[in-house]
Length: 60
Image (cartoon, rainbow, N blue to C red; front, top):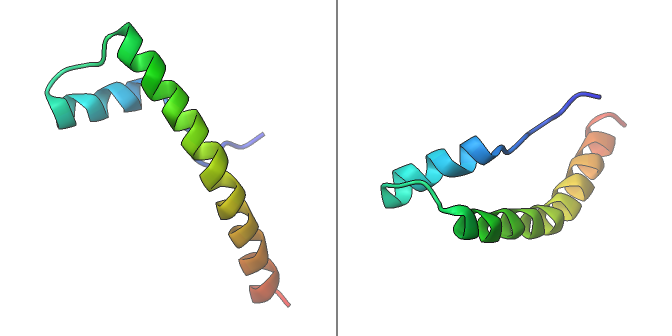
């Protein structure tokens, strides 16, 4: 199965380095992971719905 957009722990840690100048500790990383998962599930529903509708509109 092809992955469209993965987000890795490395991505999260690299972004933390850019934003706060350090990597997240284990507790912070756990919280950040949960926030990303929660946000992605919400955004994914909207994004997938829009993507499917757009694909149907453009190809009909």
